[in-house]
Image (cartoon, rainbow, N blue to C red; front, side):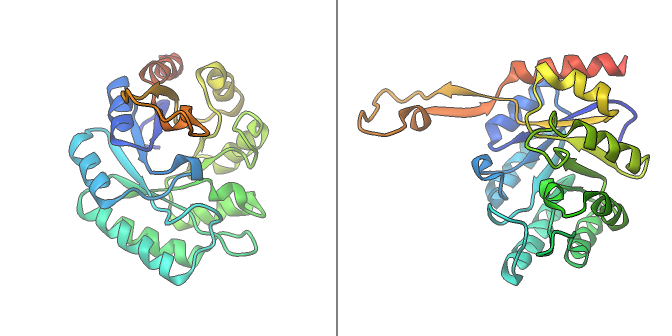
Length: 251
């Protein structure tokens, strides 16, 4: 843990969302693109712009595509290059996760990515590839040995609320060795109970709302005009609600 207090990480898929989260009091940004696919790595220009504009901690998702977490050699080389770039422009950390076909953590490849990140003094989060592990309790031990700071997890369920009992078990197993950070479906309405029932010290979420587009022309023949003419972005007030909940545990 970076500090002995509750922290909020906001997953942002645009510069606009990242800046809203920062203004609302988020401690850290996980920056990505394509949240509809579970998140992929943003472009170099987006990462560099985020680094220039954010004064809070910036962690970048290193994921070359949607889908599974079994990567070929070309994808792995892309991940290496992206971490090098993040290090050169002084990002605070990266978010990674690679599995073997049998659902175990690919410790060999993850170790190499973490080595590169640590060479630039960046921290490392292991993302929700963890929830696809065949044995997540063994996966936790592998990730601790690799030297990650935290694991982002829903407790191997569709939402962190559904995975509450597993998250609690992971927190107990982890002790002070690594932070367990719940993510997936966390909202102001369920956050307080989740904290109380698991003992976690960090929370993760997008906390988004749909905002109308400024377009004045709408094509009436599109199948889903609400998607074309609406923008999903971080909701300042949802983040503020989360901060207020977290501060109850910090006082």
